[in-house]
Amino acid sequence: MDYLLNLKAFLMKLPRSKMNGAEKFLAVSALIAGGTVNTQVLTRDLQSRWRKSILKGEYSPSFYSRAQSEGWVDPRPNPGVFVITQAGLDHLSSLSSTWNNHDSRGELRRAGGLVVVNRRGTYIRQIPEDDFCYSKIRSMRSRRLGRPDHL
Image 1: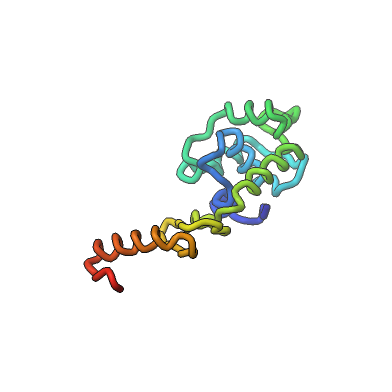
Image 2: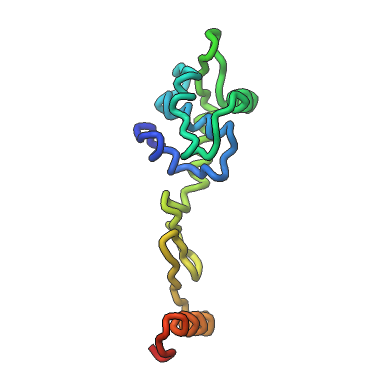
């Protein structure tokens, strides 16, 4: 994972819609810590960098409690200070690796199927054993666009 990215670019490489609050807390904390274990992170720094528009929700102190219960962060004697554990960084890496089949725009990196979908459109790749389906889709598309079937 590249911890030198800005917050938005870093979070776009993670499956934010599938992450719970504690995992989002871990992601922002790890970015602040630069991806290093035992680097102190201030809770107020995390709160100021929390972007609800990107993270799809407001910051909650319960995220810290859940991350601590999972063993991803450890508290420090000073109030409002914690550190990221190796288990936390490992978990964040596993989240990233499960998301590696998709890039930040939602396109598939490995097709392996008939239809490859991205946010900007859909296109169909024909494979020999699926000529019938492809011809049906092509005819529906041509009727919708007002073109003759033989094109």
